[in-house]
Image (cartoon, rainbow, N blue to C red; front, side, top):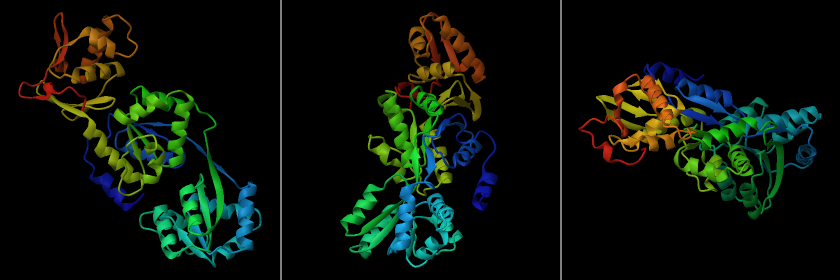
Length: 391
Protein backbone atom coordinates (compact mmCIF):
# COMPACT_ATOMS: atom_id res chain seq x y z
CA UNK A 1 0.00 0.00 0.00
CA UNK A 2 1.40 3.39 -0.96
CA UNK A 3 2.22 6.23 1.46
CA UNK A 4 -0.27 8.47 -0.39
CA UNK A 5 -2.93 5.82 0.11
CA UNK A 6 -2.18 5.59 3.84
CA UNK A 7 -2.41 9.38 4.19
CA UNK A 8 -5.68 9.34 2.26
CA UNK A 9 -7.08 6.83 4.77
CA UNK A 10 -5.89 8.89 7.77
CA UNK A 11 -7.36 12.13 6.45
CA UNK A 12 -10.76 10.72 5.53
CA UNK A 13 -13.37 12.04 7.99
CA UNK A 14 -15.43 9.71 10.15
CA UNK A 15 -18.99 8.90 9.18
CA UNK A 16 -20.52 7.43 6.04
CA UNK A 17 -18.04 7.16 3.19
CA UNK A 18 -18.59 9.01 -0.08
CA UNK A 19 -19.93 5.80 -1.64
CA UNK A 20 -22.10 4.70 1.28
CA UNK A 21 -25.56 3.75 0.03
CA UNK A 22 -24.37 3.07 -3.52
CA UNK A 23 -23.94 -0.32 -5.20
CA UNK A 24 -21.11 -0.65 -7.71
CA UNK A 25 -20.62 -3.48 -10.21
CA UNK A 26 -17.09 -4.77 -10.87
CA UNK A 27 -16.44 -6.58 -14.17
CA UNK A 28 -12.68 -7.08 -13.76
CA UNK A 29 -11.07 -10.50 -13.96
CA UNK A 30 -7.69 -9.34 -12.63
CA UNK A 31 -7.25 -7.13 -9.54
CA UNK A 32 -10.97 -7.40 -8.76
CA UNK A 33 -10.24 -7.93 -5.05
CA UNK A 34 -8.14 -4.77 -4.94
CA UNK A 35 -10.78 -2.70 -6.71
CA UNK A 36 -13.55 -4.15 -4.53
CA UNK A 37 -11.62 -3.36 -1.35
CA UNK A 38 -11.06 0.26 -2.44
CA UNK A 39 -14.78 0.66 -3.15
CA UNK A 40 -15.89 -0.96 0.12
CA UNK A 41 -13.45 1.17 2.10
CA UNK A 42 -15.38 4.19 0.84
CA UNK A 43 -18.70 2.65 1.84
CA UNK A 44 -19.91 1.07 -1.41
CA UNK A 45 -21.67 -2.26 -1.72
CA UNK A 46 -19.88 -4.27 -4.42
CA UNK A 47 -21.28 -6.82 -6.88
CA UNK A 48 -18.45 -8.66 -8.63
CA UNK A 49 -18.88 -10.72 -11.78
CA UNK A 50 -15.84 -11.28 -14.00
CA UNK A 51 -16.93 -10.54 -17.55
CA UNK A 52 -14.10 -12.68 -18.95
CA UNK A 53 -11.29 -15.06 -18.06
CA UNK A 54 -7.64 -14.98 -19.01
CA UNK A 55 -6.26 -18.05 -20.75
CA UNK A 56 -2.43 -18.26 -20.90
CA UNK A 57 -1.04 -19.57 -24.17
CA UNK A 58 2.00 -21.38 -22.80
CA UNK A 59 0.99 -24.47 -24.78
CA UNK A 60 -0.11 -22.51 -27.81
CA UNK A 61 1.62 -23.06 -31.13
CA UNK A 62 1.18 -19.42 -32.15
CA UNK A 63 3.21 -18.12 -29.21
CA UNK A 64 5.91 -20.77 -29.69
CA UNK A 65 6.16 -19.94 -33.39
CA UNK A 66 6.39 -16.16 -32.70
CA UNK A 67 9.07 -16.74 -30.04
CA UNK A 68 11.19 -18.91 -32.37
CA UNK A 69 10.76 -16.35 -35.17
CA UNK A 70 12.04 -13.52 -32.95
CA UNK A 71 14.97 -15.59 -31.68
CA UNK A 72 15.86 -16.65 -35.23
CA UNK A 73 15.61 -13.17 -36.72
CA UNK A 74 15.89 -10.13 -34.47
CA UNK A 75 13.24 -7.42 -34.69
CA UNK A 76 14.29 -3.78 -34.63
CA UNK A 77 11.74 -2.93 -31.95
CA UNK A 78 9.70 -4.87 -29.39
CA UNK A 79 6.59 -3.26 -27.85
CA UNK A 80 5.58 -4.69 -24.43
CA UNK A 81 1.97 -3.79 -23.62
CA UNK A 82 1.17 -5.51 -20.28
CA UNK A 83 3.20 -6.73 -17.31
CA UNK A 84 1.28 -10.00 -16.98
CA UNK A 85 1.68 -10.64 -20.70
CA UNK A 86 5.42 -9.94 -20.76
CA UNK A 87 6.01 -12.14 -17.70
CA UNK A 88 3.89 -14.88 -19.23
CA UNK A 89 5.91 -14.74 -22.43
CA UNK A 90 9.24 -15.11 -20.60
CA UNK A 91 7.84 -17.92 -18.41
CA UNK A 92 6.50 -19.78 -21.45
CA UNK A 93 9.85 -19.44 -23.20
CA UNK A 94 11.58 -20.84 -20.10
CA UNK A 95 9.22 -23.81 -20.20
CA UNK A 96 10.25 -24.55 -23.78
CA UNK A 97 13.95 -24.18 -22.94
CA UNK A 98 14.10 -20.93 -24.93
CA UNK A 99 14.17 -18.43 -22.06
CA UNK A 100 17.85 -17.46 -22.24
CA UNK A 101 17.77 -17.27 -26.02
CA UNK A 102 14.73 -14.96 -25.92
CA UNK A 103 16.22 -12.67 -23.26
CA UNK A 104 19.49 -12.55 -25.14
CA UNK A 105 17.68 -11.47 -28.29
CA UNK A 106 15.62 -8.83 -26.42
CA UNK A 107 18.81 -7.30 -24.94
CA UNK A 108 19.89 -6.28 -28.39
CA UNK A 109 16.72 -4.55 -29.61
CA UNK A 110 14.81 -1.32 -28.92
CA UNK A 111 12.39 -2.27 -26.13
CA UNK A 112 9.38 0.01 -25.58
CA UNK A 113 7.15 -0.36 -22.50
CA UNK A 114 3.56 0.93 -22.45
CA UNK A 115 3.69 1.95 -18.77
CA UNK A 116 5.40 1.58 -15.36
CA UNK A 117 4.03 -1.89 -14.58
CA UNK A 118 5.43 -3.23 -17.84
CA UNK A 119 8.73 -1.48 -17.09
CA UNK A 120 8.81 -3.37 -13.78
CA UNK A 121 8.27 -6.70 -15.54
CA UNK A 122 10.97 -5.89 -18.09
CA UNK A 123 13.50 -4.98 -15.41
CA UNK A 124 12.58 -8.04 -13.33
CA UNK A 125 13.65 -10.10 -16.34
CA UNK A 126 17.05 -8.39 -16.31
CA UNK A 127 16.27 -6.13 -19.28
CA UNK A 128 16.06 -2.36 -19.69
CA UNK A 129 13.42 -0.51 -21.68
CA UNK A 130 14.52 2.26 -24.01
CA UNK A 131 11.39 4.39 -23.56
CA UNK A 132 7.96 4.47 -21.95
CA UNK A 133 5.20 7.10 -22.36
CA UNK A 134 4.07 9.10 -19.34
CA UNK A 135 0.46 8.67 -20.48
CA UNK A 136 0.62 4.83 -20.41
CA UNK A 137 -1.13 5.02 -23.77
CA UNK A 138 -0.44 2.76 -26.73
CA UNK A 139 -1.47 5.69 -28.91
CA UNK A 140 1.59 7.61 -27.70
CA UNK A 141 3.80 4.59 -28.40
CA UNK A 142 2.35 4.44 -31.91
CA UNK A 143 2.91 8.17 -32.45
CA UNK A 144 6.56 7.83 -31.43
CA UNK A 145 7.13 4.90 -33.79
CA UNK A 146 5.44 6.59 -36.74
CA UNK A 147 7.28 9.88 -36.13
CA UNK A 148 10.59 8.02 -36.15
CA UNK A 149 9.53 6.14 -39.27
CA UNK A 150 8.87 2.41 -39.44
CA UNK A 151 9.27 1.80 -43.17
CA UNK A 152 11.32 -1.36 -43.60
CA UNK A 153 11.57 -1.96 -39.84
CA UNK A 154 10.58 -5.17 -38.09
CA UNK A 155 8.36 -4.54 -35.02
CA UNK A 156 7.26 -7.26 -32.58
CA UNK A 157 4.11 -6.41 -30.59
CA UNK A 158 3.14 -8.33 -27.46
CA UNK A 159 -0.66 -8.49 -27.71
CA UNK A 160 -2.68 -8.03 -24.53
CA UNK A 161 -5.56 -10.45 -24.74
CA UNK A 162 -7.18 -9.35 -27.97
CA UNK A 163 -5.79 -8.24 -31.33
CA UNK A 164 -4.78 -4.59 -31.65
CA UNK A 165 -5.96 -3.96 -35.21
CA UNK A 166 -5.65 -0.17 -35.17
CA UNK A 167 -2.13 -0.32 -33.75
CA UNK A 168 -0.91 -3.15 -35.97
CA UNK A 169 -2.56 -1.81 -39.11
CA UNK A 170 -1.07 1.67 -38.60
CA UNK A 171 2.41 0.16 -38.32
CA UNK A 172 1.89 -1.93 -41.43
CA UNK A 173 0.53 1.07 -43.32
CA UNK A 174 3.75 2.88 -42.37
CA UNK A 175 5.78 0.12 -44.01
CA UNK A 176 6.68 -1.97 -40.96
CA UNK A 177 6.82 -5.74 -40.83
CA UNK A 178 4.80 -6.60 -37.70
CA UNK A 179 5.32 -9.80 -35.70
CA UNK A 180 2.34 -10.33 -33.33
CA UNK A 181 3.15 -12.09 -30.04
CA UNK A 182 -0.13 -13.51 -28.63
CA UNK A 183 0.65 -14.28 -24.96
CA UNK A 184 -2.85 -14.87 -23.59
CA UNK A 185 -6.43 -14.54 -24.68
CA UNK A 186 -9.62 -13.22 -23.15
CA UNK A 187 -12.52 -15.67 -23.23
CA UNK A 188 -16.06 -15.50 -21.78
CA UNK A 189 -16.37 -16.77 -18.20
CA UNK A 190 -16.88 -20.52 -17.84
CA UNK A 191 -19.86 -19.90 -15.54
CA UNK A 192 -22.02 -17.04 -16.90
CA UNK A 193 -24.26 -17.07 -13.80
CA UNK A 194 -22.59 -14.20 -11.89
CA UNK A 195 -22.39 -12.08 -15.07
CA UNK A 196 -26.07 -12.70 -15.74
CA UNK A 197 -26.94 -11.62 -12.20
CA UNK A 198 -24.87 -8.47 -12.67
CA UNK A 199 -26.73 -7.71 -15.91
CA UNK A 200 -30.09 -8.30 -14.21
CA UNK A 201 -29.10 -5.89 -11.42
CA UNK A 202 -27.99 -3.27 -13.96
CA UNK A 203 -31.27 -3.28 -15.89
CA UNK A 204 -33.53 -3.53 -12.81
CA UNK A 205 -32.17 -0.57 -10.83
CA UNK A 206 -29.98 -2.61 -8.49
CA UNK A 207 -26.72 -0.89 -9.52
CA UNK A 208 -25.62 2.72 -9.37
CA UNK A 209 -22.37 2.30 -11.32
CA UNK A 210 -20.51 -0.25 -13.42
CA UNK A 211 -16.71 -0.25 -13.50
CA UNK A 212 -14.57 -1.44 -16.40
CA UNK A 213 -10.80 -1.95 -16.32
CA UNK A 214 -10.33 -3.49 -19.78
CA UNK A 215 -11.91 -3.15 -23.20
CA UNK A 216 -12.46 -6.94 -23.50
CA UNK A 217 -14.52 -6.92 -20.28
CA UNK A 218 -16.73 -4.14 -21.63
CA UNK A 219 -17.12 -5.97 -24.96
CA UNK A 220 -17.91 -9.24 -23.17
CA UNK A 221 -20.62 -7.65 -21.02
CA UNK A 222 -22.26 -6.09 -24.08
CA UNK A 223 -22.04 -9.39 -25.96
CA UNK A 224 -23.67 -11.32 -23.12
CA UNK A 225 -26.43 -8.72 -22.86
CA UNK A 226 -27.09 -9.12 -26.58
CA UNK A 227 -27.21 -12.92 -26.27
CA UNK A 228 -29.85 -12.60 -23.57
CA UNK A 229 -31.90 -9.97 -25.41
CA UNK A 230 -31.03 -7.31 -22.81
CA UNK A 231 -28.76 -5.05 -24.85
CA UNK A 232 -31.35 -2.31 -25.42
CA UNK A 233 -32.27 -2.30 -21.71
CA UNK A 234 -28.62 -2.27 -20.66
CA UNK A 235 -27.76 0.65 -22.95
CA UNK A 236 -30.78 2.56 -21.61
CA UNK A 237 -29.65 1.90 -18.02
CA UNK A 238 -26.08 3.04 -18.80
CA UNK A 239 -27.48 6.20 -20.37
CA UNK A 240 -29.58 7.18 -17.36
CA UNK A 241 -29.47 5.24 -14.10
CA UNK A 242 -26.15 3.34 -14.05
CA UNK A 243 -22.91 5.33 -14.27
CA UNK A 244 -20.36 3.59 -16.56
CA UNK A 245 -16.85 4.28 -15.23
CA UNK A 246 -13.78 3.19 -17.19
CA UNK A 247 -10.16 3.20 -16.05
CA UNK A 248 -9.09 4.87 -19.31
CA UNK A 249 -10.06 5.76 -22.88
CA UNK A 250 -8.98 2.45 -24.44
CA UNK A 251 -11.26 0.57 -22.03
CA UNK A 252 -14.19 2.81 -23.03
CA UNK A 253 -14.01 2.10 -26.78
CA UNK A 254 -16.55 -0.81 -26.91
CA UNK A 255 -19.04 1.23 -24.87
CA UNK A 256 -18.56 4.37 -26.95
CA UNK A 257 -19.16 2.29 -30.09
CA UNK A 258 -22.69 1.72 -28.71
CA UNK A 259 -23.18 5.42 -27.98
CA UNK A 260 -22.51 5.13 -24.22
CA UNK A 261 -20.84 8.14 -22.58
CA UNK A 262 -18.43 7.11 -19.82
CA UNK A 263 -16.48 8.84 -17.07
CA UNK A 264 -12.72 8.29 -16.74
CA UNK A 265 -10.10 9.49 -14.24
CA UNK A 266 -7.23 11.67 -15.40
CA UNK A 267 -4.75 9.05 -14.20
CA UNK A 268 -5.48 5.54 -15.46
CA UNK A 269 -5.32 3.77 -12.09
CA UNK A 270 -7.76 1.98 -9.81
CA UNK A 271 -7.35 4.54 -6.99
CA UNK A 272 -8.28 7.56 -9.14
CA UNK A 273 -11.15 5.53 -10.66
CA UNK A 274 -12.62 4.95 -7.19
CA UNK A 275 -12.03 8.59 -6.21
CA UNK A 276 -13.89 9.68 -9.35
CA UNK A 277 -16.87 7.52 -8.38
CA UNK A 278 -16.74 9.09 -4.92
CA UNK A 279 -17.28 12.47 -6.57
CA UNK A 280 -19.70 11.52 -9.34
CA UNK A 281 -22.24 9.34 -7.53
CA UNK A 282 -22.99 11.69 -4.61
CA UNK A 283 -23.18 14.52 -7.16
CA UNK A 284 -25.95 12.64 -8.98
CA UNK A 285 -27.95 12.01 -5.79
CA UNK A 286 -31.06 14.12 -5.09
CA UNK A 287 -30.80 16.28 -1.95
CA UNK A 288 -33.96 17.85 -0.50
CA UNK A 289 -34.84 19.94 2.58
CA UNK A 290 -37.65 17.91 4.17
CA UNK A 291 -39.38 18.60 7.51
CA UNK A 292 -36.36 20.50 8.78
CA UNK A 293 -33.93 17.78 7.75
CA UNK A 294 -31.45 17.44 4.90
CA UNK A 295 -32.33 14.30 2.96
CA UNK A 296 -30.06 12.87 0.26
CA UNK A 297 -31.52 10.00 -1.76
CA UNK A 298 -28.72 7.65 -2.76
CA UNK A 299 -28.93 4.45 -4.76
CA UNK A 300 -29.90 1.95 -2.07
CA UNK A 301 -29.97 4.12 1.05
CA UNK A 302 -30.76 7.62 2.33
CA UNK A 303 -28.63 10.13 4.20
CA UNK A 304 -30.70 12.00 6.80
CA UNK A 305 -28.67 14.91 8.17
CA UNK A 306 -25.53 13.01 7.21
CA UNK A 307 -26.55 9.73 8.89
CA UNK A 308 -26.84 6.70 6.62
CA UNK A 309 -30.22 4.97 6.70
CA UNK A 310 -30.41 1.73 4.66
CA UNK A 311 -33.83 1.40 3.04
CA UNK A 312 -35.44 -1.77 1.56
CA UNK A 313 -35.88 -1.78 -2.25
CA UNK A 314 -39.65 -1.24 -2.02
CA UNK A 315 -39.13 1.77 0.24
CA UNK A 316 -36.53 3.23 -2.15
CA UNK A 317 -39.02 2.83 -5.01
CA UNK A 318 -41.67 4.77 -3.05
CA UNK A 319 -39.20 7.45 -2.00
CA UNK A 320 -38.01 8.02 -5.58
CA UNK A 321 -41.62 8.29 -6.75
CA UNK A 322 -42.34 10.91 -4.06
CA UNK A 323 -39.09 12.77 -4.85
CA UNK A 324 -40.03 13.17 -8.51
CA UNK A 325 -42.59 15.74 -7.33
CA UNK A 326 -41.41 16.76 -3.86
CA UNK A 327 -44.08 18.44 -1.80
CA UNK A 328 -46.89 17.24 -4.09
CA UNK A 329 -49.35 14.52 -3.18
CA UNK A 330 -48.76 11.25 -4.98
CA UNK A 331 -51.78 8.96 -5.17
CA UNK A 332 -51.64 5.41 -3.80
CA UNK A 333 -52.39 4.03 -7.26
CA UNK A 334 -49.32 5.83 -8.67
CA UNK A 335 -47.15 4.60 -5.81
CA UNK A 336 -48.44 1.07 -6.36
CA UNK A 337 -47.23 1.22 -9.96
CA UNK A 338 -43.79 2.27 -8.68
CA UNK A 339 -43.51 -0.79 -6.43
CA UNK A 340 -41.71 -3.71 -8.09
CA UNK A 341 -44.05 -6.70 -8.43
CA UNK A 342 -46.71 -5.29 -6.08
CA UNK A 343 -49.76 -6.41 -8.05
CA UNK A 344 -53.05 -4.56 -7.52
CA UNK A 345 -53.40 -4.45 -3.74
CA UNK A 346 -52.91 -0.89 -2.48
CA UNK A 347 -52.32 -2.39 0.97
CA UNK A 348 -48.80 -3.16 -0.34
CA UNK A 349 -48.19 0.60 -0.48
CA UNK A 350 -49.16 1.04 3.17
CA UNK A 351 -46.91 -1.84 4.23
CA UNK A 352 -43.93 -0.55 2.23
CA UNK A 353 -44.56 3.00 3.48
CA UNK A 354 -44.54 1.85 7.11
CA UNK A 355 -41.21 0.12 6.56
CA UNK A 356 -39.83 3.18 4.77
CA UNK A 357 -40.73 5.46 7.68
CA UNK A 358 -39.14 3.03 10.14
CA UNK A 359 -35.97 2.87 8.05
CA UNK A 360 -35.72 6.65 7.76
CA UNK A 361 -36.05 7.06 11.53
CA UNK A 362 -37.98 10.33 11.07
CA UNK A 363 -41.64 9.44 10.42
CA UNK A 364 -42.67 13.02 9.62
CA UNK A 365 -40.51 13.12 6.46
CA UNK A 366 -43.40 11.46 4.61
CA UNK A 367 -46.90 12.79 5.32
CA UNK A 368 -50.15 10.90 4.84
CA UNK A 369 -52.82 12.93 3.05
CA UNK A 370 -56.11 11.28 4.00
CA UNK A 371 -58.01 9.71 1.09
CA UNK A 372 -55.46 11.09 -1.39
CA UNK A 373 -52.02 9.58 -0.88
CA UNK A 374 -48.63 10.63 0.45
CA UNK A 375 -46.23 13.53 0.07
CA UNK A 376 -42.70 14.48 1.08
CA UNK A 377 -42.95 17.20 3.73
CA UNK A 378 -40.85 19.65 1.75
CA UNK A 379 -39.75 22.74 3.68
CA UNK A 380 -41.89 25.75 2.66
CA UNK A 381 -38.88 27.90 1.71
CA UNK A 382 -37.70 25.35 -0.85
CA UNK A 383 -38.52 25.70 -4.54
CA UNK A 384 -37.58 22.04 -5.18
CA UNK A 385 -41.21 21.02 -5.52
CA UNK A 386 -41.28 22.62 -8.94
CA UNK A 387 -38.73 20.10 -10.19
CA UNK A 388 -39.96 17.05 -12.06
CA UNK A 389 -36.72 15.04 -12.28
CA UNK A 390 -34.87 12.66 -10.01
CA UNK A 391 -31.78 14.80 -10.39
